[in-house]
Length: 479
Ligand SMILES: [Zn+2]
Ligand SMILES: [Zn+2]
Image (cartoon, rainbow, N blue to C red; front, top):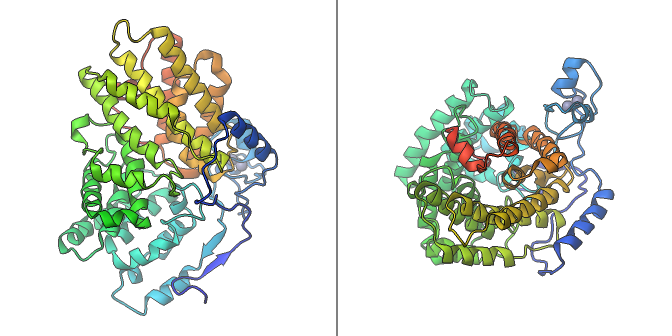
């Protein structure tokens, strides 16, 4: 076979990733949206798939024919119900028996003891729930060589796979059994120092992000793992030569995505310091690096991590630093995302606007008389919110990158007013589709939080999304 490690069957590919090294353009957002509308009209369903002939759950229960459109079938779209179906097969398909045959030549390799069902599900489905484009996914078959090196990683992957199969139902015993094995093994690997740091990082990262996926009480966003992952990243970044390594850039992006998503969920001094010279140093080198989760947004993730901590400090202690706020506002306002791919542009821009919304919400948390004019601040927030929601909703739901929209979409939509009834409804529809893709239940809880928040806002109560979440004692992570 052409590939030494794994045999891959290719299907015709309709969409190819944007060339990471294209020059930076300067078209305005409006132009980009116009290009978008054009692209949408010409769009070929990029998530075309082999029909399973089973249909989604809702259609099966109603005994009606399902068109199996992914992530939401047409009937579920019309009914407004949650669409639960087998995910589509992606462009390539791993032939797992071949992997096992290959791996078993070394009986001591951990992969020889793998659970083929769970591993197959990982490569076919689970590994794609957090990626912009399934064709550029380090958690897909590139992870195989790491699975062969780290039993902890193998059991982590199997644990997440088992939970994903069952919509992260917390009663899935296989998931917790695999998870407990992974936790035991990661401690051994950490002390034996045999496993490469990047593989240790990946294991801890995946154990950490999945903490919130399998926790029904929404208290656990994987804080201990976050601290562990940060310590490993710190160690890797302390050698400046590593800053050029694409694998190190990739794990830095993973870390910042996760950190950004949870930076408001803990008191700020409980989280690791993020704006170290090392993190800043590698982030500066990532401007033109295409990241599988963030595209070109890693710098914005970094800024949102800093801002999240600041928001939380203001919320808890009421202290603000007006000069710093002006500086951040300035750099967020003037930051232009790369625009060769309109869908990625919109995602990036929505994250940027999320930062501006947070900065303006801070003005309500602890207003400075004469400085923060309520009317002006409200208008700023609503303008950014409407724009970001429109940008995100204009990406066709069949685009894979929609799975990364939950974080900016939820915050922006939380500031929509009663006048934006259509956008509110479409946001809920979009979040249902995201749930159909990723199956992570925090998305459903975020939807319920949004509905409660809109009700409060409409009856005249001014409260932010994160304040309401904390009041409910939830720590909802949308990674
Ligand atoms: Zn259906
Ligand atoms: Zn359906």
